[in-house]
Length: 183
Image 1 (cartoon, rainbow, N blue to C red):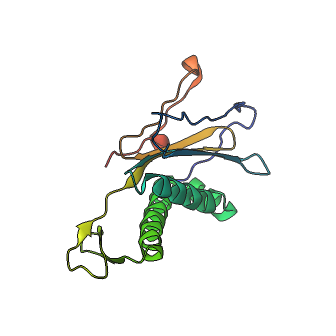
Image 2 (spheres, rainbow, N blue to C red; image 1 turned 90 degrees about the vertical axis):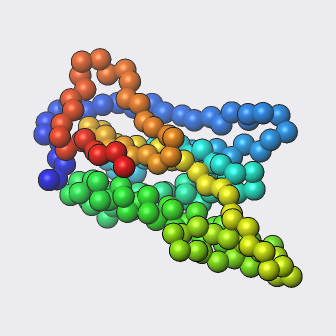
Image 3 (tube, rainbow, N blue to C red; image 1 turned 135 degrees about the vertical axis):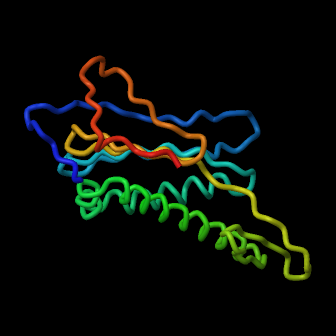
């Protein structure tokens, strides 16, 4: 089923912002966020990313953020969201996952390490002078919320992130088109 605004008179006004808490002194903050509104004001994209892994957390959250922006800021993606939101969100997360993997491979290549992607998709690395492979540890959680036409909220997440909708009182209407399975 496709998503359509049913009453052009009803719309929501939004204010948003973001801040990254520096966290524990002496540790790198690996979190990131993205707030974007299309020029025509019909699409608002909100992303929160929680990078994990001492060496790769910041790289992961940045790669995912950039991939989400590239995909979800495209006018053709807005059309796809209206036609099949679930598949479109899944595609966006798949692209972000691939971008994170590629950023890890680039990171280690730049440092002269040998890498390979094992069956199951995980990355291993080794120094060229060693025969011992080590599993790469790192990644990011992500919560993505998209507001279409200032009326339709589409939200998805991966990892231990989630999205909360608050402050609408009795005015929020939940429809089957907006409900997603958890996986």
